[in-house]
Image (cartoon, rainbow, N blue to C red; front, side, top):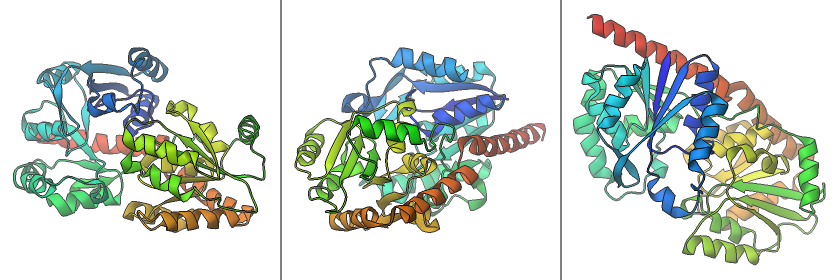
Length: 400
């Protein structure tokens, strides 16, 4: 089948859902096209990602994974959401897709496709990444009311299928928009387990490079240096040494700009624990930084990175928002009280002072969970089964 993925903003070197799903859809024998915009909106101005080599990075991604990509002009963006020109509909129609997956049903693009759902000459499936914990907009109640009043009826009437990326994403849809549960299938995020896996030789090589002994305790945290990632809280928690018995180090991978990022960097300079700063990396360059570590920590928002760390065999420490609480229920890591720097610090101290074999056992539990349930090759197959179901429903409705 020819699968078209519609994504507002696509970053070829990132490790987001669409990057891996498109790759594995193609590996499974399907034709794949990514439709996205040439506008990176706030991302382009933030300094988190370097777009100077976008054209060659797009080419490398497409050639390596044998997928097609079309970047369309946008008319700008609202609240970080791209405004595609109407040309997007004729462009997709010309590709004669078997199914179109629109990423983000609550984005402007998702809502526009939903409004036209009955008139589109191809089946459409949507996904949703949103959870209540990630919503920080003062107009949320008005948006929810609009969606429930004007768009949920279209979802119900047209039997629209939605993939939620975890149970909390499903709850976000059913609770806030009254979308029936039977229309929402949970197919979660995952990890590229052929890249993210333990590697003792890399662990030794990188520790030697950064003058870290094998008995030292190494933490890793990845992602942009921004307020929603709460990196300053992590820096504050590390100002004083975590242990008098072992040397400890944080490998912090990510970049940022502005007052917040500057405050983070200044605080890191005061830390008594060793800090190794690495700028934002391509996703393909990230595995070694996990492989050299003993623990992964995210003071805020760990999303996809959580699965990568677990795939490498690392226990994870993260804030106690509902998705993380559920993830840590299988003896594979710890949560700390949200926005509590002292509790974060105490949790890290507990990990540093644990018997190394016990800590390793937590990481092994996580690794087995990812390998058994959350590898992208498995997830892509589940998605494709859902695609085929929607395609068959579409054909039956057309006949009727």
